[in-house]
Image (cartoon, rainbow, N blue to C red; front, side, top):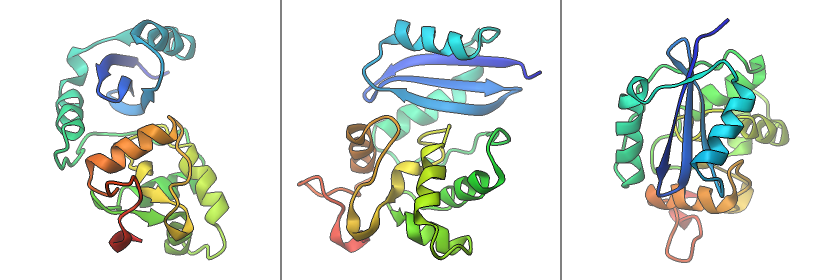
Length: 178
């Protein structure tokens, strides 16, 4: 059984939670519309034996603060995707290769994995990403430059893409990136 620790904090995006199992991040979530108390209650329902520990998350908090200020950040922190299916892990590994300030389509990711007609399956796997921001699922868009979905809501996705300079002033993907 994994030793679970978590932290919660307010950010410009809303309440963020980070959960680690045996010192590897297993979850990072933006709880859009939830305050700290509601997010804590939700985490407790998932991890009743978990303990809150702000000190264990100093590095990730520092990196997230810089990222949310619009700085380019490399999230060199240990993560654990072992709870995902083999296909989802492959998709998430591919997401880690998308450079800051760039986007890829669901179809492109499928083709990189050798699945030429797997855009929908890739989209479902991307939607299961438990470690938002660090595994940059917000950098994945639908064909023809459409934003697609996002588990924390499309407005959060727009804000993350905006931080990285991917959206133009009209909230559209910059044409040079599609």
